[in-house]
Image (cartoon, rainbow, N blue to C red; front, side):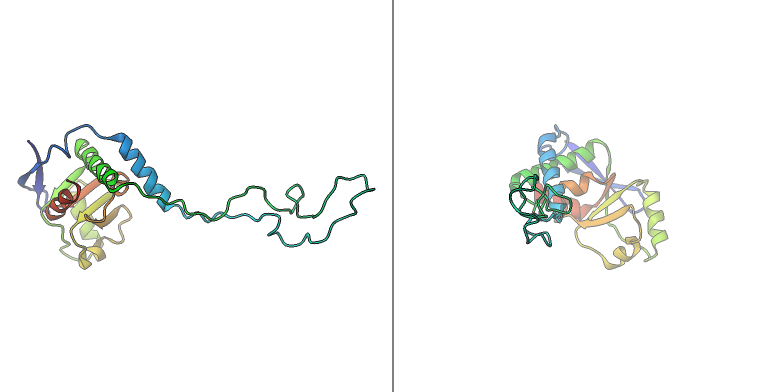
Length: 207
């Protein structure tokens, strides 16, 4: 049976939690991870790129010269895509790139991301995450004492106002509720800091 160590806020070992073998320790499903990450990144796209076609470009209402007898090619408008200042042919228009995968695939990707962090020893469980003061430097020292370096994602069961104040100015630290976290959130962080209650809530969500 796999075990997960729970620490206190100073890094001291408190207890061990048994882990379900169906989630941790097995093969990491890279295929479903890839599909989920592509979906989450596509959903972040704004799709605001836009160009004007010949009908949308200002001007060009009059035929520039007569149809025959000039020796030039026929032209009905100066806003033709063939001319400078004309419209764009097959240019981009605002669109929605978002789509969704089935819930079972999203849950499978979340399991795979947690398994990946567990396999690389990049997930750290703490009994309770709380800020002793609302000073950012004190909270940064606490993270350093836990040897959490790089981009850190904290998973909690509920967001504490004092904790938010203490951590909001740290560019490498982000916090999210375990019921809202996605595989994309986990994989884009170097370390995952999770509370005991949030971990149990997360296991209930993905089992």
